[in-house]
Image 1 (cartoon, one colour):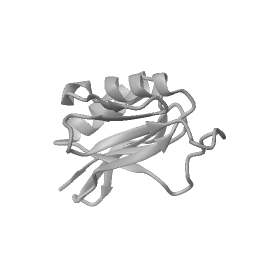
Image 2 (cartoon, helix red, strand yellow; image 1 turned 60 degrees about the horizontal axis):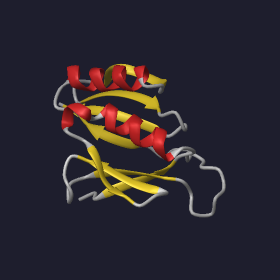
Image 3 (spheres, helix red, strand yellow; image 1 turned 90 degrees about the horizontal axis):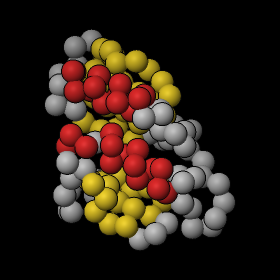
Length: 123
């Protein structure tokens, strides 16, 4: 149902590298590059993350309560994405672990611009 989610960034080139490197194992590359905005994903038409320098040229601000969540195939993959994000300059917002009994496993980071990301598995 989601086509793409857009987050504001302060440096488009750094953001493209962060997200392409983070999801390299999934085949993610820049699918659309329009200068101040780029869409990153594994295939055109599939879910993507868009990174953009704000149109109004003001500083980007991560929202309070906003988060982009990325599915993982398994708990080890969620943990691997968390660890990779941390190695790429993300900051910890919640180490990988079981969150809701046996129904939800998640890991949380903030990207270099402060946008909150989750990597999760249901079940």
